[in-house]
Image (cartoon, rainbow over the protein chains, first blue to last red):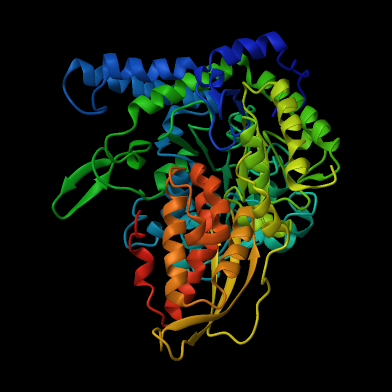
Amino acid sequence: MTTGQLAAQPLSEVEIARIRADFPLLSRTVRGGRPLVYLDSGATSQKPRVVLDAEREFYERHNAAVHRGAHQLAEEATDAFEAARATVARFLGADAGEVVFTKNGTEGLNLLAYAFSNAGAPGALDGVDESWAQRLRLGPGDEVVVTEMEHHANLVPWQELCRRTGATLRWVGVTDDGELDLETLDDVVGERTRVVAVTHVSNVLGTVNDLGPGSRLVAAARAVGALVVVDACQSAPHTDIRELTDPHSGVDALVFTGHKTLGPSGVGVLWARRGLLEAMPPFLTGGSMIEVVRMEGSTWAPPPAKFEAGVPMAAQAVGLAAGLDYLTEVGLDRVHAHDQQLMRHTLDRLAERPWLRVLGPQDPSRRIGAVAFVADGVHPHDVGQVLDDSGVAVRTGHHCAWPLHRRLRVPASTRASFGVYTSLEEVDALAEALDRVPDVFGLAG
Amino acid sequence: MDLYGELILDHAKRPQHAGLREPYDVEVNHVNPTCGDEISLRVHLDTVTGGAQDGAPVLRDLSYDALGCSISVASASVLAEESLGRPVAETLETYRHLHAMLTSRGEDPGDPQQIGDAVAFAGVAKYPARVKCALLPWTAYLDALARAGADISAASERPQGA
């Protein structure tokens, strides 16, 4: 985030209109000619034309299998793929050698989790710097810490890692206000903690977890030598996350996914400290990721290639780079300021409707990207259905964060989430469409 | 909107035969993992004595506890109302016709003669994401029947005339 800097201007109406014109899908209609109001960008973002063009141009002009072939196209495709990596690195404020392309955020988190279990195989850490090697050995008595607000993608891989290694999963709880309960931090993070995996922004509540300079959670993890893994899937589309990769941040690895960040589906990013990437055993093995292969066994290429087995998703990486450049051109500080104006407006409009209850922090500055709410007496699916009938696309259910919903004592919720192209009028359309809910279901609106 | 007919809303607000009851042979718990809707459902089977259907299983009681959207709760209510006290074979016939209607994308309006109040769910067929809400109680019911030892193979046959 951009604390400590001069506050950036939110996007003006004219600027939002200009941005919206760059996203072809936003001009379509749904459900019998109603204008689309897309408030589901937390699930996946829409794509600007530059992303579609970049992918198309790659296929029309440069397509070849990257890192293979002795021909000109192979060279061009490889250049395009590596240029995309450099763009991602700039977006993250990191070194290109620390950027691994994955299928999505989930794969990046599994890649990390499997590094720990694969580290237990005989010889897996041969030649690895001991200071890193000892951080990767995990077994009974060791603990992995997550939080109760994690998306299943940053929970289940760690549960499974613990099951495979005999380590114990622990978690930081969530308060009634939808914040991490840091009062319990000293009980949860201790000498046995080896990994702390935490989301930057809750995909349900929009809660921003403080992981930048001065973060209590990161400091607690560092104090005991635990690796810090950050799920940045919900923050990367909305705010500058470079502080997380700063050499002094205390964060060791982070993931985000392309399709939520204006890019195509099928590409995600894992960033990790070079030392960690060098120490971690590979997750997927096969072509491209090897150094020498003999029938008896093989050795690995240096990172990032070590983690990119098989022909990679070059066109998608090129598309993602175009999407990240688009955000950078708007300016991440202004993208964040825009999200804040949407957030304030949404909370205001929802507060006018006393039969709705917003989950999570009530202070807009504690949130990014998403607002989840429940309507007394009406199931979220039914709310979503009525909104859909008005052309308003939201997500309903537990949003792959079932334990969080259990904690907040709701079976499910309705979530409106934003993109750089979301307009204040769309928030008004949401509010007006919500007013049909009491009519349809006979509530006292 | 055509999805929420009065019949569905009535059943959702006042689910018929709701609450888990004794005695029962089998209890099952089903969830819809995409949204967290849950149903616990019990069946109590008996056998027909005398007549042409002598020895055939009959549904003496069906009780349930449903937590979910109006479509899934109403569907559980209609399932109970349409099935209680009837021979299992007839309820499977109802299921086949209901399933055909729900998966028709709106082309099969449903036959009230065959599925009774369940015709109210015809609008659900136009919303593929909601079909599994309507089917959740029925899927639980079939599972309970199978676990109670009933033959449910008739449920997967094509409905007559469809």
